[in-house]
Image (tube, rainbow, N blue to C red; front, side, top):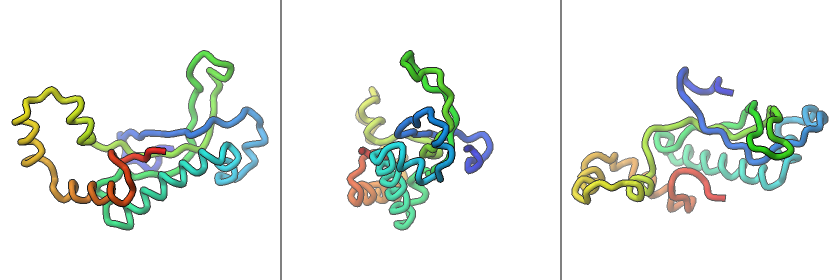
Length: 148
């Protein structure tokens, strides 16, 4: 659901597993549906939310996108047996944020080295750089989203 987003803002949605087509799944509670789909998917969702809450507890709300669990409705892509099936399932939502990771900037950039150095020294928010380094140290993450 996009109810938690400001008007006009977009979100990134991750579905760690796709539910079977059995209608009995709709009778389960939200937590039971995540657990029943797959223990691995449930663990992934818990890990992502735990890292988000660590960031909140450490005062890093300006650094991390807001995350929540909510329903998503979509169509399974591809040409397999399940393709074209409409699903409504729990997913991990995250607001889209401006910018890009330092890793992406450096690896995709064909900028002259002097311009890269100028950007890194004069245009980056030094407080956010320190907070990001602390978050990386605490959680072993490199670009603000979990590696599972």
